[in-house]
Length: 414
Image (cartoon, rainbow, N blue to C red; front, top):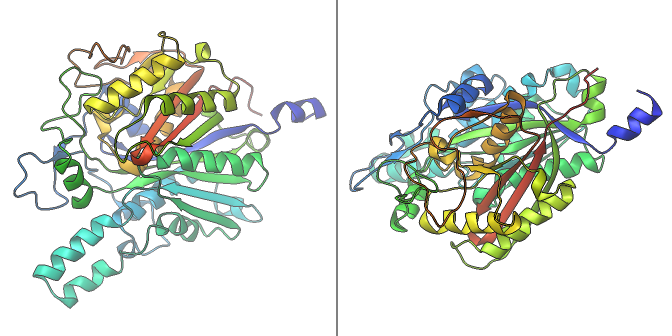
């Protein structure tokens, strides 16, 4: 590249690899088809005994074979969430056109967000302690390694020699925190490549907590619908491979999207209730960091949990920033359920795919929009759309908010 071209791309970060494990599709291609078709990932829970619960649906991953993606790490020593994170990272690494030779002499940054870590295995351990014995407990004990395994296991699997591996536990906004963390590492020149995302597995602890809060829907999740009744817990993993635009152009990589900026804040307003003004501030921080004006945004991937309080508060926060003229605003949780720490990571993958494939995924299960929400949620069917800038919202208990802005890359690859 010439000096002028180098200056033009300096400091810019792009998505060149996507790895996805979800209830509507494993792998980028199947996930994309699932979004286009508006698939529902809902099924009866199989992860644990649901006796005593009046309703027990979730969005569990089916058809995932960890051995197909994990070869260097003993799968039976990884928690299910760690299996998701490692497999999704391998998918993203290979999707970006990298191989083992590409890690030699390169600096890697890994950030993985989670809510529950190995809680699924801790659930199983409790059951075995009550009904099993030491011999049956030993294999499960091997998988109940602290949550940091979600990031470090990626480094082990890919045999990365120069790497900073971090697991972030900012609950349901953690995936966006991880993407922002990777973006900073690349902007500051601290890494050559970043693997960023989130992973979580369905577990009794989280399902029971939301059930006791009265926020588990009896059948399906209906974000922004006037008759919505709550969330469905889900599981999966999403990892994006990020690199500088200069690096991507130099090696002729396919570019899905550009990561334009992000915003984070924590209001500590309430343990579970979202704060409208704080969400609006977080959106503004992200837009400012990206150098984007509200009127330039074509689509918002909302946190959109399907609870009464969250959907109204988030919609009002969006309307405040967009002065009553918000872009189309969808919730992937209608299809995927609430995948906790993986939620905004999967949303990030969806945003990059939507930009590349020129379509908007739908908010399924929709019958009538709540008049208090005042958005176009693209009900039930995907629609074609040329998307230049997309906003992805992530929010969590305790007022942990995170927003990432993605943009279409309109230059030429080498």
